Amino acid sequence: MELFFSDVIDNGLILLDQEESTHCVRVLRHRAGDEISVIDGRGTLYCCILENADPKGASARVVSSEPGFGGHPYHLTMAVCPTKNIDRFEWFVEKATEIGVDVIAPVIGERSERKVLKTERLERIVRSAAKQSLKGAVPTIAAPCSVRDFILAAPESALKMICYCFDGNKSTIKELLENCSNDIYVLIGPEGDFSPEEAELALSRGWKPVTLGKSRLRTETAALVAVAQVYSAF
Amino acid sequence: MELFFSDVIDNGLILLDQEESTHCVRVLRHRAGDEISVIDGRGTLYCCILENADPKGASARVVSSEPGFGGHPYHLTMAVCPTKNIDRFEWFVEKATEIGVDVIAPVIGERSERKVLKTERLERIVRSAAKQSLKGAVPTIAAPCSVRDFILAAPESALKMICYCFDGNKSTIKELLENCSNDIYVLIGPEGDFSPEEAELALSRGWKPVTLGKSRLRTETAALVAVAQVYSAF
Image (cartoon, rainbow over all chains, first blue to last red; front, side, top):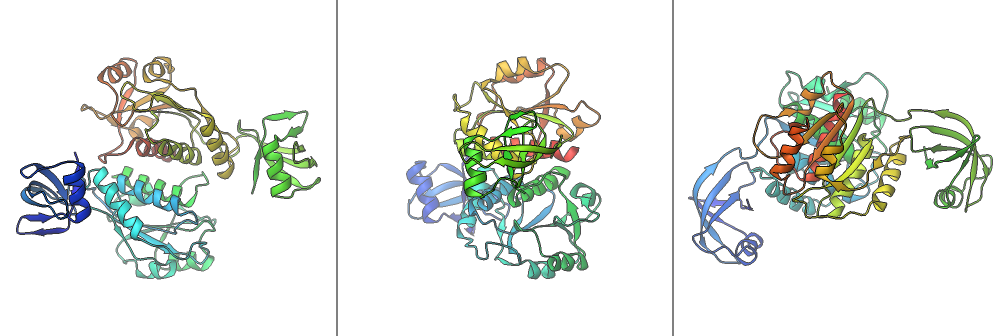
């Protein structure tokens, strides 16, 4: 099943952008009258009939729609400090999308080696991973901000969990997910961990310290294990 | 903490091979008398004093040893069909090592697009991932074999789980791990799934069909979710 993406849907007519149109008409050789499947990136799958097979701008008529296509029963925001080697972060973004994540927020910690991040490539990665893994919703890539600002902006009502290496009593994600709100935030620090000030701020704002187990995990691996633990708990 | 690897340990004297010696002496500039940490790849960490700082073949005297260093309370064999794009399989091998796996068995299914696999690179990946994630044991990379042969060779007593896409009643890994043996086998098929014959053979040999949840996961992602679920269950 090949999915196309479009967020231009008006009166039952879907317009594909040039890249999607070329892929649909030139690469896959679809012709007017063919049935194609389109996701809107907000959760809905549309079954359509291709009307105008223009490789520069194709259009398709909606026949039926399926909201919540490939969705999951939780809302997960992963706030992760981008790794020095960006491939590792991009890999996490692809895999998290396959498993099930709603928002990926790149956050910059006081000890982050990488202080800047371009999000254009990440947008392409989540879109293609969502199509590949048959999901109607494409995760949102939030604008990068500081760990401090992210902690302060997170909503009161959500279950907010922070993974750090400092000592102290920690719960597991599984324990905290039992009869909790489904609005879940997980914060993963940089290679050099959070600063003590960042960790204290999080705790003072109601973030719960969690452990991912005994293994010493790289930033992107810790983030993916957290996604898998949330996914597996529902 | 920087770990070196050596499996040449005799009468409390450890010999580093040329690559490890060069890294220790030339790159990290260790001198005779320095304390270094060495893993033997079989689970033990050795604290040593560098005796002969020869960049072609250094030697170190064992001061103390820690068996089971960075170990985990289960024995997990992951039998996974290598992906067409080998980067994806190598990525799985690295991440599984960080999280905790004992044997990685590349298996070739009837529907595998990749029929051959060189294991030299995988050996290097597991060794460096084990050192990086502070584990005394380096996972074993088994010689590639067919899915059929692997199914037939797996021990009677182990908990054997197969992930496939055919319909039917399936358990979750978490359910099957409750009060079971800690000797765990997980079998993950190729992009095109197992053949019906392979799946039937596994069931007839006592393999349990498991689901990894609703998301449609790539081969390497499914394999990593399985590792994370086993790791998180102990």
